[in-house]
Image 1 (tube, rainbow, N blue to C red):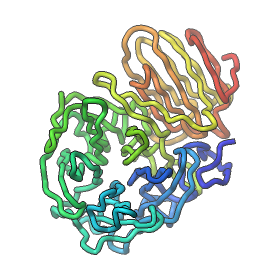
Image 2 (cartoon, one colour):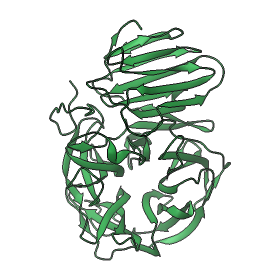
Image 3 (cartoon, helix red, strand yellow):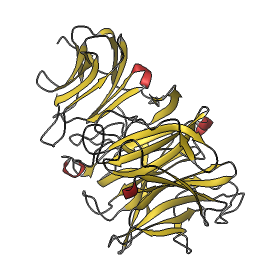
Image 4 (cartoon, helix red, strand yellow):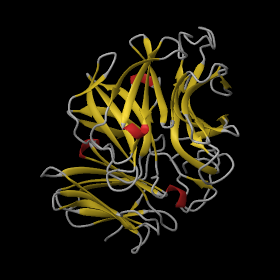
Length: 432
């Protein structure tokens, strides 16, 4: 049995068993993803008081393996006049901020302070000298204020002996870059955008190096691949001042409905780029039929680059996954709760498809995703949890993450014609 994130198994309807969910109440974007002294820290947008959006604060959870999470007390709480919106966290190893010492470097959170009257968004700091257990807001906040209503989601990292902030000018479809020697004083370097998809505000950017290329992740809402939220990415170079894209074509990180606002962990072991997203969609997130919690995170995935495509590889679970893999050129499988409730995944008419029409409820969203693929046989891996299916195809270059809703759980696999090399773990195999 896989442990619930709080360490206590809970059996509520739709509760995932190996995806992080808060014990109770609302959650959205992952924030401040960080690895330090053997622990992964997940901070997240959280309403500590209710199962709806509001009172935005940073929730907090820790894990040694990215799957068995312990939920900690709220890390940074909202105030009566402002919310603690998305951002990032770093280990200030050299104590450039002066918040700690070189022997005990501080963890510094960089977040957006959102005025509840919607008059302004600015970037602020909070620091911890007890390995993330408690945070103190910097008395000199805000450290970056351009008097803009939609200026948010700072992702900060140490690049070439300086701190680089990647932050969104949301309504302008631009990503701004700033530099700092100490996390406190920031100088503007450049802007990127508008480019590619501009059907919704730009949010939650992340600038990462994969091999000899740099990748800029940009979430947007609405304007996703099908409906509501989605994440696009650009490939290019970072020259110390600006991101220069190789081209401005649209590349989607995920072709499913439910992977938004994802960013990578700072300081991850072996320099890995480990990504985690919010497994929901603003189009219907507030109506998801879950109680006493709402929303989960995606599987953690290691990112790499193959040509001009990101590869997403799920981080292994210590106890393994319920999953199925197969190859096909024109065939499918069904992952079933019953003959009436199932998800169908396969290839037809040279398109990879995921059909959740028999494992959905009344939420207003497309239940069929189709993506054109190259001719020939394709490998498909599906990881199944209560409440979700995550599809990794073509070596992880094509990914679809979808919420599903069944009465109990998807527990069996029924191969249809054309499904080859079927391998099943943690699920039963039944005839179609």
